[in-house]
Image (cartoon, rainbow, N blue to C red; front, side, top):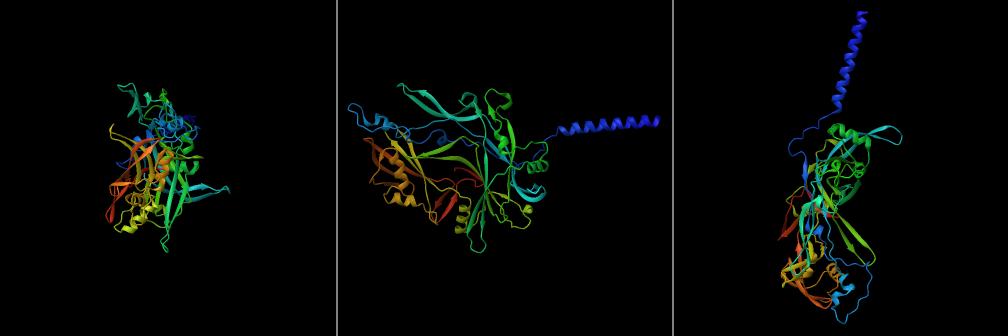
Length: 431
């Protein structure tokens, strides 16, 4: 009888001890990361995102005519030919751990499990509550003017911020025999079973969301403490069946900001969204993929031609042509249009050569014509060869001075070589 009592007490203590251990395991503490393991990219809030260039309103049908008592510029057709759009722009802080691979168990259609190499990116998203927008004011003449400024989201018109992110892994494979480059793209996959394995490997204390789960709840909601400023969300993007020969790898992420561009035509509208591109380099091979080290950034080499090939693999954007209307009397300039450029194999900008020769490039001519500028047969004067040009024209009967600048982005040409302007680990672009 005494032995039975002792056994009962021992069993009870064992169960109680197991229960306390289980409860302790339910409340896990996130692992402390070593310094610089988490790469942090701040929100991108640019003036060009909050205030558009002039945009024609093709949807607003109107018939051009010349009023008898008013200038042509006061008519509806003239005013609808170029309108500036203003909007509040938000962006989130994006932090991530290095791009990695894992040998994961993947369910197959047959019902069996198969070990496969999975590429994944572990990341954290946070909203700091800052919004870039236009602040209205009234000048001494009673006219409404706008100035750009960063303001708190609570004072903006934004009621909610909900993310719909997309992750595209782009891999460039160099053929060892021909030297040609093949570019492949892979969409982020929804693989809950693999996500669970990654969570156990990285940090069981942190809940990892996929892109669909991220969009199911707002990141921020005005007046809601549950979705307040500073809230953090952890997620993971995974890719399956990536070509094991991939050397140059980039990840293009959309949905981290509400900034976008629209190019309006007579029959259609083309949208481009602000995209964060992360660049990686994998100096490995197709054997034992998971043991290869993936480096952050792009490789830099001394050979000019080879460096150009590497830039092509990462689709590094070239300079832009930016047209502005210059009003010397008011000491102001208004952005009219922005056009991409093309380069030859020596990185000479073809459009700059046209402008130096006094000719307006076709894309810029089209953009300005859509805004009502009479640019047929204009002669362009070079102010700074290869960098700045001006020409005189008219818009709805009024004389206008238009300036065009070549605006480098990530690199610029210097004689027989070129230099990178910014860090190459990541950049923002429109796609």
